[in-house]
Length: 347
Ligand SMILES: *[C@@H]1O[C@H](CO)[C@@H](O)[C@H](O)[C@H]1NC(C)=O
Ligand SMILES: *[C@@H]1O[C@H](CO)[C@@H](O)[C@H](O)[C@H]1NC(C)=O
Ligand SMILES: *[C@@H]1O[C@H](CO)[C@@H](O)[C@H](O)[C@H]1NC(C)=O
Ligand SMILES: *[C@@H]1O[C@H](CO)[C@@H](O)[C@H](O)[C@H]1NC(C)=O
Ligand SMILES: *[C@@H]1O[C@H](CO)[C@@H](O)[C@H](O)[C@H]1NC(C)=O
Ligand SMILES: *[C@@H]1O[C@H](CO)[C@@H](O)[C@H](O)[C@H]1NC(C)=O
Ligand SMILES: *[C@@H]1O[C@H](CO)[C@@H](O)[C@H](O)[C@H]1NC(C)=O
Ligand SMILES: *[C@@H]1O[C@H](CO)[C@@H](O)[C@H](O)[C@H]1NC(C)=O
Ligand SMILES: *[C@@H]1O[C@H](CO)[C@@H](O)[C@H](O)[C@H]1NC(C)=O
Ligand SMILES: *[C@@H]1O[C@H](CO)[C@@H](O)[C@H](O)[C@H]1NC(C)=O
Ligand SMILES: *[C@@H]1O[C@H](CO)[C@@H](O)[C@H](O)[C@H]1NC(C)=O
Image (cartoon, rainbow, N blue to C red; front, side):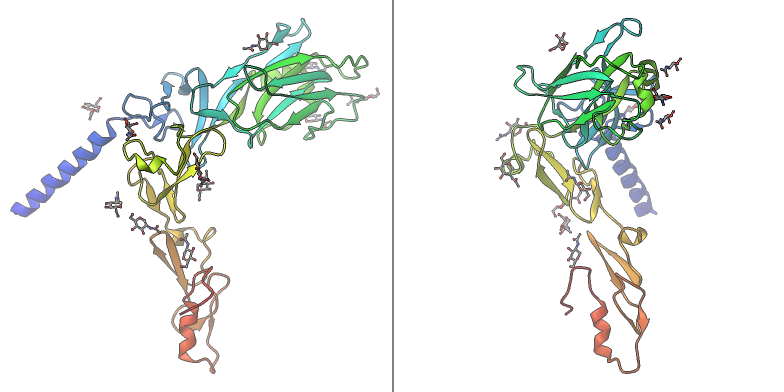
């Protein structure tokens, strides 16, 4: 009786301790997850990863930038960015260029996921990628006649896209005209923006300024890369255990590829959040046969899994169903089925 009460008390204590550790941190804002190193309340985030949640609108912000998603394994965040334009006075205030400055933050514009995009029929859009103007690129879009452009194609006729340099934390957009007079398409506006390249697909109707602007509410999704920007790489970072961000067992450090510092990731066979203690959990591969094929008896292992043929059958169960022994099979070949995908030498 005594020991049962003690056990109950211990369990209660353990539960309270776990709650105290979480410090009542808000881990969701509307429908968006807010995983560590991000957080909202003081003590709930790593320095530089503080966000704010507008509870009434269910919107998440990093400073004044609206965040629409955080991806921990890839070190990325999706945000909304207002577009820039150059229109006939009749449509909108004629010209609006909205720069974006992330200098001094842990964020950079993803060079792999974003494309600088311009749409219009008489458009030169310049992407100025540094405050000192040391890097610029640009896009030219012309509509010669209404048959040269088509939905889904962004190749200079009505729509133009280009890649940007890695490591950028600032951009501004400026417009000028090609001097191309004969426009066969009623096109009141040029638009330009940095956008998640997998999100944007050109539609000929986007050349109608009001349609495009209204369809997207004047903003488009963009991808930011983030990193633990302590100005150290994976060689030095683990030497200071107080500041080292990769907290979980079975996690590892990766030098940031876009920006300074490093990222953490769960080791192969584990998933979860490498930035919190115990965050990387073993994947039960047997529950996901579509990703981890097994046509025999599946068994989960720490960081891995095994797949063997049932007693009395043989074959490669990672590839196809096991089959019964032919009468000539010896019992020693039974063990040859106990192999892993990359293990070519059964022992
Ligand atoms: C968590 O929040 C609840 C209600 O706001 C409060 O009663 C409790 O003391 C808080 N716990 C901690 C550990 O801050
Ligand atoms: C982290 O690991 C996951 C799963 O193995 C992988 O998809 C992802 O690309 C890795 N992240 C980085 C930054 O390499
Ligand atoms: C393209 O131009 C031709 C000739 O100017 C016109 O007949 C046709 O309707 C136009 N097509 C579209 C989709 O506007
Ligand atoms: C951005 O570009 C616009 C248009 O050229 C210019 O007026 C504005 O001063 C620029 N802003 C910054 C911060 O460079
Ligand atoms: C392109 O797509 C839009 C919207 O789906 C449609 O209204 C338009 O007619 C299409 N244009 C062409 C040239 O197919
Ligand atoms: C552009 O869109 C507006 C609003 O949908 C419409 O009234 C107008 O006719 C469109 N213009 C063209 C050239 O398609
Ligand atoms: C990580 O970056 C550091 C410099 O910060 C460099 O010395 C080290 O070789 C890099 N490690 C890897 C695995 O690229
Ligand atoms: C380790 O990191 C902590 C927190 O950033 C810092 O206060 C401390 O000075 C660092 N220690 C060393 C030896 O660099
Ligand atoms: C799983 O085990 C096999 C055989 O030991 C090995 O080749 C493979 O790399 C392991 N996979 C992981 C993710 O550890
Ligand atoms: C992480 O690994 C260390 C060393 O193996 C062990 O002492 C510790 O309990 C582990 N932590 C967790 C949360 O599993
Ligand atoms: C996972 O971490 C534990 C504790 O640090 C370690 O004993 C084990 O070997 C690790 N597993 C893999 C597959 O690396």
